[in-house]
Amino acid sequence: MGGFFASISKSDCVTDLFYGTDYNSHLGTKRGGLAVFNKHSIHRSIHNLENSYFRTKFEPDLPKFKGNSGIGVISDTEAQPIVINSHLGEFAIVTVSKINNLDSLVKRCLKQRRHFSETSSGETNPSELIAMLIDEEESYEKGIENVYALVEGSCSMLLLTKNGVIAARDKLGRTPILLGKKEGAYALSSESSSFSNLGYDLDRDIGPGEILHITPDGFTQLRKPNKEMQVCAFLWVYYGYPSSNYENINVEECRYRCGAALARKDTVDIDFVSGVPDSGIAHAIGYSNQKQIPYKRAYVKYTPTWPRSFMPQNQETRELVAKMKLIPIESIIKGKKIVFCDDSIVRGTQFKDNVQILHEYGAEEIHVRPACPTLIFPCEFLNFSRSRSTLDLAGRKAIQEIEGAEDGHLDEYATPGTDRYHAMIEKIRERIGVDSLQFQHLDDLVEAIGLPKEQLCTHCWDGSSRF
Image (cartoon, rainbow, N blue to C red; front, top):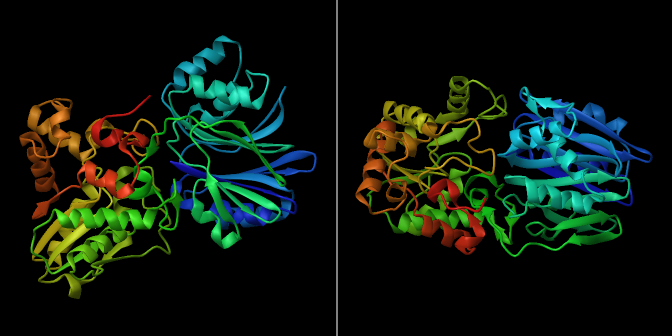
């Protein structure tokens, strides 16, 4: 996915920018970048984060940065920020995006005899493409509207200019931008959790398709928000930090409600409930509170030398790293019947390895309760499943085993209560080796979030979305 942060202040913004960007580190795994407007020009720094933390990489750079406005990013994909000098002036840009028609837009630009200088893994850097689309128009506002019109997928962005920062949220609001303020300064972030320890109060969410121009003295709305919104529901289930709010709905409290919904539909007799760290913990607490049964930590997470569970590019190594980070507590596990809550089951391979360890440590029964429905459709709007084929999804693999094809009767498989739904769940249960498996129903998840379903993107579970 990725996350970004901006600080616009009457005094030097660099400290807030550094720590505010770092508070988005859980959203990205590959690269970090900072750009600050230093009186007359933009100073930029980019580092690879795959073998270290953001703070470690950027602390030595801080003396080089001075200025009243800046943007930062933690990216899952390309090197950012990109610095552009065009007829609109010099600007830096960071994006959180997934451009499904990237190739066709690149060909369109090349046909116009334009060129690209930035590449990521042999591909055109999406942020440079977005900047090029902005430069096709006579103003930043019109240029961003050009992006909204041409990009298929999603794109939220921050632009650093000599006159302040421009923030533009994805046209359907799939990824958030939050506005914070304190005396003499404003901030923008993918996560509202960036604000509190830096002294900012959450002012509001930027709306879908809304464009704001922010200076230390205030902000101007360049484009009103769209009426329609489809914000990613996975923000509350998995991506979001517990202390963050999106659309005035707190992540941690939503996860308590998800766990409670799982508990209300569950009749299994167990000794205690446990959460798979980190995001599964709140779901398990909600389950425990609803059932009035103990919550215990059957696993603890060891993080000092493992900064990223999905850091390595090789899938086998990623799974090993993820396994190494979770340490079971044998005296709690042995002889017990346990429900494990997790945010989701994507591939199922990591869960299978963890279950094997639980059996080795003497668990009597293992029951798994994911806080969201079965993932059947690859994400089209974030980078959640960008590197995975459809058959990497546990649900689609089960469907292929049953149907002999990966795309047969998908509506029935996505509908709880049907024979095909139960057959799919049973296949997944057998593969990961647990005593029972019950996924969250989509209606219960929507209710736990608290927004109307039409305002949520639920594509990965039911295939419904606006493109």
